[in-house]
Length: 222
Image (cartoon, rainbow, N blue to C red; front, side):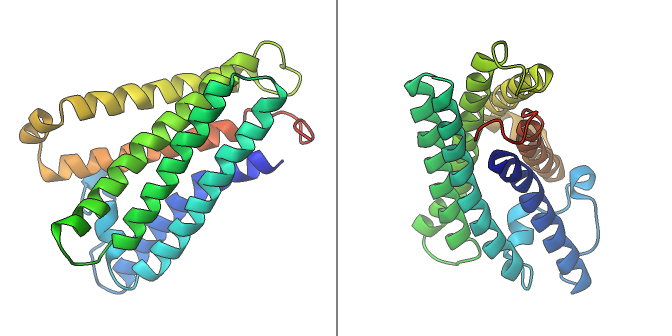
């Protein structure tokens, strides 16, 4: 099933890409080895823009952009068959498109030195990408909740509940971090902020793995 392949790909590809880039940077003595999820040693952007890791990072992230767009469109195609509200479908596409567009902006301007406008395109791009992706995931999870009772033959009731509550936690945690960002950053070290960044990225990525397990039958959406 295409939606399952996209789900698994969006979980595996970005994660493996970033870890591979870290491994390449360590192998070329650009950085020392560490566990960023625990040590908070390097930001994702720092690893991604380092040479030669950037030669892997940018192409693979562009593939991720294409997969995000396909993931959203495929969900909309499927949900139309279940008569999900057009409002939900439009919001999934809107936030998915915004997320993909901002990720492209981040990729293009990553590692490029220039004016404050360029810096904003890079930093603002990744920030809006995260927000938009989280909301797109949330409306996908809401749509799944609409079909969990009536279509248990083809979808997993438990997997949908896990997907929804996971998405809700990502939204709430992200909102809390955004709301208290300035105050929170003053009370934490740089390493702590990086640890939060890496683990929030992983937490977001797990949503895609959840949607992989939602579908029971390969031919469910054909």
